[in-house]
Image (cartoon, rainbow, N blue to C red; front, side, top):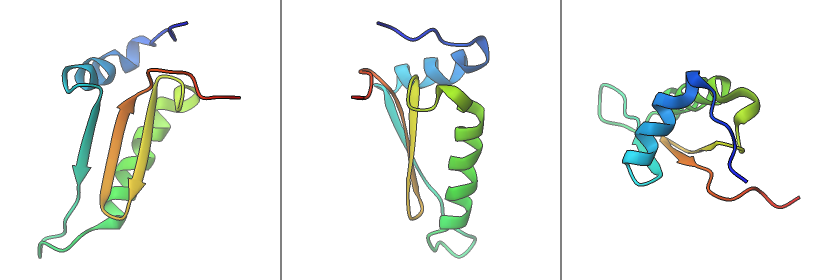
Length: 78
């Protein structure tokens, strides 16, 4: 079963599909040091944009200053 993609998320899903299904982002401050606060803000903004579709259409995972965004290809086990 394929989840229906809302029009507002089509550009994001299209971008991720063009990247092979996932993209990773690293955040650094003006001094080149890891910036986990900026990474968290980015991850939270993406989670808010995905809303109820988080984990159904795409996943957003943050570890320190890195954020991975991936298209969900299989439904999560219940």
